[in-house]
Length: 136
Image 1: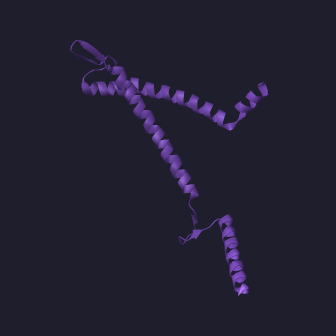
Image 2: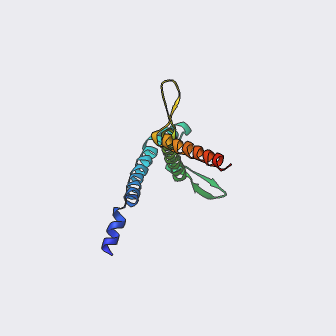
Image 3: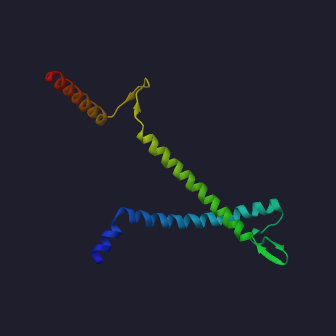
């Protein structure tokens, strides 16, 4: 059982996942600190209330503490924006990597594997035409 567990842990996907979780937690702490100590005071100056965590309103005697909710929304938006930037960058890199290369005249230069497959295709078409012509 220990050997199976060791094999499971040593797989790349598990290690990558663990690293992702650790980096994500550290990033979340950083975003929380930026929100609490930098953005909240700036927003507080604009709306006239220095500490957003004390922000509240009352309706029919019920008090709604919305300061922490505002902090959570700001944190969420920052994290989602960074995730969006990462995904967009990865998609562009993947798209750019799949494009064919171009020479200095702007002509597409196929990779050797594509050329080889095209030669095989052309050879099979040639053989098929000759077989068809030889039958009749």
